[in-house]
Length: 246
Image 1 (cartoon, rainbow, N blue to C red):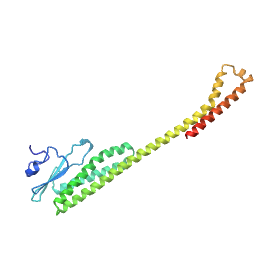
Image 2: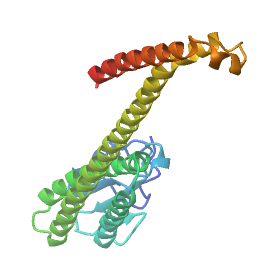
Image 3: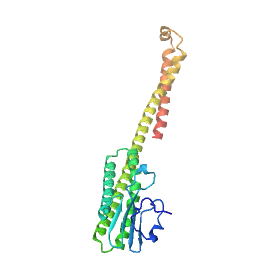
Image 4: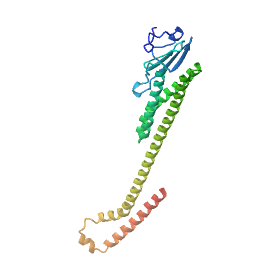
């Protein structure tokens, strides 16, 4: 199998490393063979990447010379790579601060989780590189920067989750309060209907007679009084049941 595209053809890597390389960069890792160090890293992941990571590779030869692609610049390129993670994490932190709804928090978390995993793996690679080069001060600094980035993205992820949980709970509380208010209004309407239903029923029974005839009939006022009494009784029963439900 030929050399993968993410490794420059001009790099003189030992076979012990090249035979372990696949067509894709795979997981972030350090290869330490025959005095050669090969750091296989990922660019800051994005949602649109569809889990396909873009390689960022750094090589240290036995003479202590560093090279990198696509950034170049050796160790300066590695430091710039860490700076790109810090910048991305800062942007995610601002997005969490600006989020107001569960949907907005969810959209931010979709961005946070890939960066969180990638930052964690990046720290593991830098720690392994630090152990392979214990006397390299700039590697110590880069490892520390990776640790700071890992802590920062952990805090951003925690803030995003807390914010989403709070907004969901707040929305549920508002819905419950709205439902309770609607129930109270419905009970008031039921009580009014219970009071006037008997009266309306009696009126409908006598509604075919002219009004002047109804007024002069002896039983009209008695019927009206009975209707109001029945309405009061039904109203009391409905109110009692609603009170027990409350």
